[in-house]
Image 1: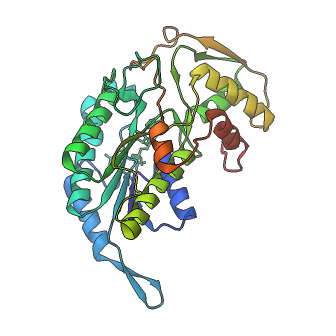
Image 2: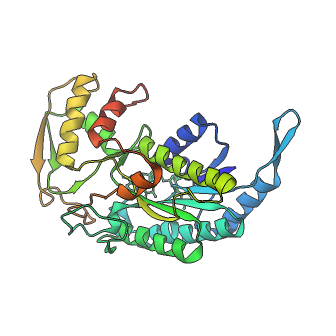
Image 3: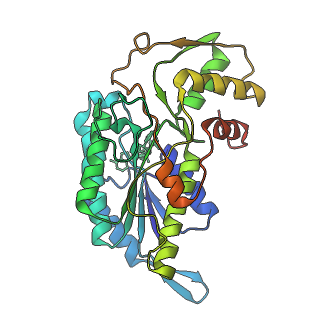
Length: 315
Ligand SMILES: NC(=O)c1ccc[n+]([C@@H]2O[C@H](COP(=O)([O-])OP(=O)(O)OC[C@H]3O[C@@H](n4cnc5c(N)ncnc54)[C@H](OP(=O)(O)O)[C@@H]3O)[C@@H](O)[C@H]2O)c1
């Protein structure tokens, strides 16, 4: 049995979708089980594990939690500048509590982290071992969450990702689509580079990581499992927010999501000031996970087109 923490969030919902599609049994929690409160986590896992269910008429199964996926986090990047303590509690205390719970129950962990652990001064894609140097409160708490997990357990995968969008929740694709349907022009930052990433692609890769580990453990004594540690996952290629917005407009028009003429205008970060500083360049090098899983990650444009075309698109 798998425990999906943060199942009510944008990425968590996409994980739920993926796990259900693959027939993987799981339980999901949102802020109803506060990760900053170790006792709440313990109480939940103890209650879940002590229950058993009938998988079929006469096969009784235990609810032993053998994997935890943590999608829960304080994710309001700008608000975190004023709410550092709150962000720290969810992202650091929360991650530490989850790692301790996982270790004491013999469960393995997938924890989601971010490209914002880097400062953006690199001109080339960041590899997993590039030095972390976050430039905002959110990034600092996420960077520390990684260290806390690594100090607390060994059987973990930390997956750093970037610029997520998914079918539910607030995200750049929905925000832009709405704005482009209402306004004559939108100004979008053209001096920050990263990679837009579809939550569904990330969830699929993470589930592959779990399946590979699980089958390697039971069949071949772990030989073919991806080594535990940090991995990067984003769609391939790179874009500025302006490039991303232009692609949203083009695909939005193509698939009838935008029925209105709107000019997409590039602007600088100085023109569009935010409370938290953002890295100017946060492209992730994803070679390690591609090699470990034997996959080729789709380009951000191809995934964005599939997303906008999909019947699950809600805006
Ligand atoms: N969004 C991005 O662009 C992006 C980029 C890179 C990395 N990430 C990382 O990806 C992960 C998922 O992000 P997301 O965008 O899906 O986040 P999200 O939509 O904001 O969802 C956050 C989830 O965390 C839960 N949560 C928050 N505080 C909690 C607490 N104290 N105890 C228990 N649950 C709590 C929320 O529960 P409720 O719904 O009940 O409040 C929700 O399920 C995060 O680790 C984030 O740092 C995101």
